[in-house]
Image: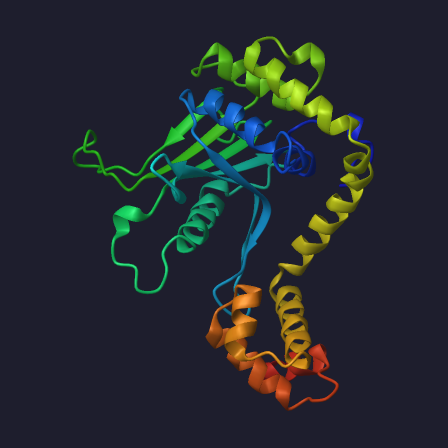
Length: 299
């Protein structure tokens, strides 16, 4: 599907435009705070925003995930620690199997918040995976479906894993609240005439500022093309080739396995395997030849 090039024609349901607004240094944090406070119907504290963050697979040939907008809410007593993490994912294409897709996404996100040697799992932040679509995933016309893990034998048992999946349907008529309905309608039609309450009017002000920014207007398609390119690279062979190329560049700069792993946010064992093979192809370090050598059984 060809991406719309005119930034005036897109809405916040467009993942690239959502990214641009959420990551804007002037309005991004306030935008995410208001959006979340309405969708979750509660006050949101100090946040930091990371848009279009890629989490690599656990090894060669293993799939990673791209987060459209990741918002971290800080502990009021410790700005360095996240107590809540929100993954905001707008979707306009019904590709199916979203329950399993979000299960995979949740696992990849959680893995980043526990380091080697960490033993206190109470420090793992609560995670809210927020899926917003213009189609009804479950077909019951609710604007909000809230999903928790539960005990089948004791339905009222508080499981306490800190995990919540939220499916928002922009055209849903049941459940939710007037403020949620207004915000969902604005996300789908991000125009001044859709701003009907204080929250949507404030969000519309942020959206208008971003649309008018000359640099952002010029970068809309650039960012869209980059995201599409990186999504293609995330396929198994494409991502592996990209990783090999990145490691080779680091080798040429004289970096060690541990330094490369840290720079690329990749597992040391994975980097070491590619590193040792790449050395056999010095000084040219042809990524495609290295990839074929890593998988001789596929030649």
